[in-house]
Image (tube, rainbow, N blue to C red; front, side, top):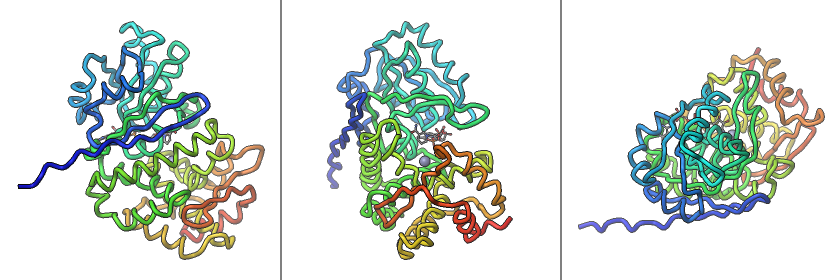
Amino acid sequence: MTAAPTPVAPIRIPVHTGSRQSSIVIGDGVTQQLATLLDEAGVGKTRFVVSSPTVWKFHGETISRAMGRAEVVLIPDGERSKHLQTAARIFEPLIRGGADRGSAIVAVGGGVIGDVAGFAAATFLRGIAVAHVPTTLLAQVDSSIGGKVGVNHALGKNLIGAFHQPAVVITDPLVLKTLPRREFRSGLYEVVKYGMIASPDLFARLLRDTRAIFARDPDVLRPAIAESARIKAEVVGADEHESGPRRVLNFGHTIGHAFESVTKYRRFRHGEAIAHGMLAAADIAVERGVLDEADRRALATLISTLGPLPTITDLPLADLLAAVRRDKKVVNGRLNFVLCTKIGETAIVGDVTEDEMAATLRRMGVTT
Ligand SMILES: NC(=O)c1ccc[n+]([C@@H]2O[C@H](COP(=O)([O-])OP(=O)(O)OC[C@H]3O[C@@H](n4cnc5c(N)ncnc54)[C@H](O)[C@@H]3O)[C@@H](O)[C@H]2O)c1
Ligand SMILES: [Zn+2]
């Protein structure tokens, strides 16, 4: 007879920002203890769950059972739903349900639900508490941490938003079992990013344990999610409002965002564009002589092991460079570019030229 597996105690990662002390709780099956964990974190007694029909189809029953008497508001997710009108759909049930300053929103979903529901929480009655229950890998390692919330405008992404730190983030690696493979891989590229900017150990484990990761083995996923969350929490703690150190999180994002915007956010999942962007940033670093070719090759190997990426070779070079120029990270005409100097270390430089980027993009196969 095999013994029942011993339950693993949840991992708790503290998040200290100027505006709030909170924590990220990561553990297999923690969604089943939602009410207790929300109580422990002091999250308001009247709770409104905001989720999407897709997420609810898979996890609604578990969450409902765990939450007890909470009203559920379902809004559509996916990038095209991330606008003010969707956020507005949250307000009416809050008002009709008698929400007050002591009420809370519990956002159960991917980055879109977290950003939209977080934005509603930031603005309703000038701010009520939000707790995140991230259900995509990207949301678990990235968007649920750090307090950035917001919606898109027809003229640009994430143009309307706020900083609103969550009261608690409750992360259950088991909910990822239902995530479509492409969404899962998209989140993995952000995990690769954390390895590249801050953790050679995480990077090595991704290379070594790829198979177990794709099997969504919680014993391998849990520590990878926790390490990523710890890195993000640390960076955010040092720089809540993105004035300095938080920029390292943009590794791969300067050129990655250009791939996304030139293809109107239709061709790539965010992480896929970032994977190309990291390869570009690594190439620039090698050309400058600040990164070893062996490290660039290790990154390329890991990224190709994780699966195919949509092509970039047909994208017009001039459009890509114009998109980089428009990116909001160009401050006072200076483009802050995150270079990796070895696996686990970065340098932010302000002098990467368009010629350098063009040369790299050509080496990556961009021809027109
Ligand atoms: N706030 C931040 O700091 C921050 C950081 C990074 C990204 N973001 C934002 O996050 C958004 C992207 O988030 P995302 O990648 O999670 O996309 P998403 O929220 O659109 O979710 C992707 C898809 O997965 C489905 N899904 C979610 N959980 C599931 C589950 N457990 N099982 C099955 N299906 C599930 C959703 O219904 C959706 O169709 C973007 O809008 C981006 O701007 C925000
Ligand atoms: Zn990203």
